[in-house]
Length: 151
Image 1: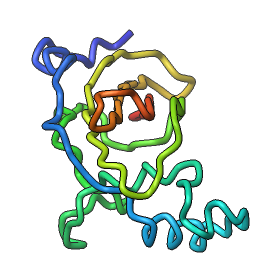
Image 2: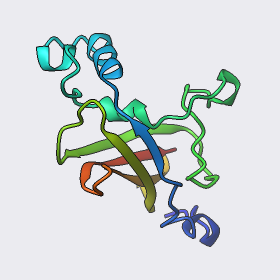
Image 3: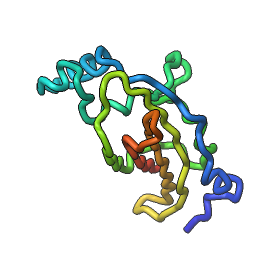
Image 4: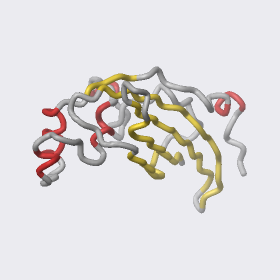
């Protein structure tokens, strides 16, 4: 192992974002269903949100100049890593209850893990972010664990 992870980088484990509160509207649900070619009537009518609807709901809206080279908003939750080429490492989503129009949802993201592995072409850094989405009754609606790989 090359020891790329400093104590400063590792100290970010447990860092949590400010809660983000958004409303799921029937119009947004319908637009998402159409954009993703989801043809089920319950989605097209906006009665319930299709899978993955929550992904964009909490994204920052930023100018193009504030996006990374791969078109992603720069995440203030993660530290500056010694490796910078990012790749998707996985997405594990659990839906606890459906998202319906009029639901106010609050998302909180936590940097839960940072670790290093040796790859065939050199060292790799992995980090994981857990997002919990809750409704106004504080019931869990969605949990999402995102893993990113840096090389």
